[in-house]
Amino acid sequence: MPPSPLPLPLDGITVVAVEQAVSAPFATRQLADLGARVIKVERPDGGDFARGYDTAARGLASHFVWCNRGKESIAVDLKDPRGLDIVHRLVAGADVFVQNLAQGAAARLRLDAATLCETHPRLVAVDISGYGSGGPYAHKRAYDMLVQCEAGLVSVTGTAQEPVKAGVPAADIAAAMYAFSGVLAALLRRGTTGRGGVVEISMLEALAEWMGHPLHHGMHGGEPPARTGLAHAVISPYDAYPTADGGQVLLSVQNDREWRRLAEQVLGRPELALDPGFATNRARTANRERTDAAVAKALAGLDTADAVARLEAAGIACARLNGMTDVAGHPQLAARDRWREVASPVGPLKAMLPPITLPGGEPARMGAIPGLGEHTDALLRGLGMTDEAATLLRRDGVVA
Image (cartoon, rainbow, N blue to C red):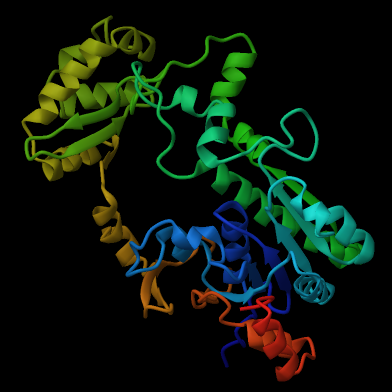
């Protein structure tokens, strides 16, 4: 007899989130995918402003679709004491609270992590901010692009001529994933101590941690890494090269043995394997232009598929330079059955399974994308409020 399916890890956990944009919503979506009940608190006048970023997802905003599946939406005016009381009552029944309001706003509403944890000792409460609760930048406005610049990511991204930001909100994503893992760690500790506690996440600190090699290289005496586009500052060849059919193939040679195979089996120039100007990575990096020219000449005469086939046959790490349409139809994602449909106010939308595959194979809970205030009435009833009382709140604009 097959074993009973395991519950999702966060079944029975309730999360209340006063959240907007990307960092907090992306963190709480991870919790929802793992089985948590996530109650998203939004403004009655438009809700999470990420709802209005674009209309690319069949009329819905792509950011919102990405970050908010599986949640219940309640629209509440936090500036009205009656609305704020509703949120505090929701928090009283929650295991986790997450907020990423502007610095100081949560404290004015008594929704900061320290205040909530003092009142509710078992609560795990998360404050996400741009720069942290203290220091000279504490009240500085923080948007993803700005934090990418402050954390140095932009200084190492782009070409020698022009720095560029990452094409995804890297600071927001970094903060979200540390908030996610911080919540899991705090819940694990609560399981042994009975106490929750404060989790503080700074976008700057999260992204500065991700700077890894460039940061350590620079602060321990090395030269700051130069911007090299798709190339690598200290490895060659390592770049994208055009192919005969208009595509581009990226390859990375990690050691001199691989270079010898590349020279012999792909470039058709075995003499380069032992040439002092190419034989070592240091030499190839010093002669980067000549190295790249040799690789580019060979791949320019091949179609993309042929180039990839030859590189793979020679044991050289390589990839195609894919666009978003290519990723949506990627054969590896299709073969691993990574796509699902999630419900939304505009009908089913395609979404990718979360990258965490659980030991028992139990599927992630990829719930519907909520409409603004879709669950307000049900949540008010859950707090014991009568329909008449809810109608009065709606009349006064306290809820929507």
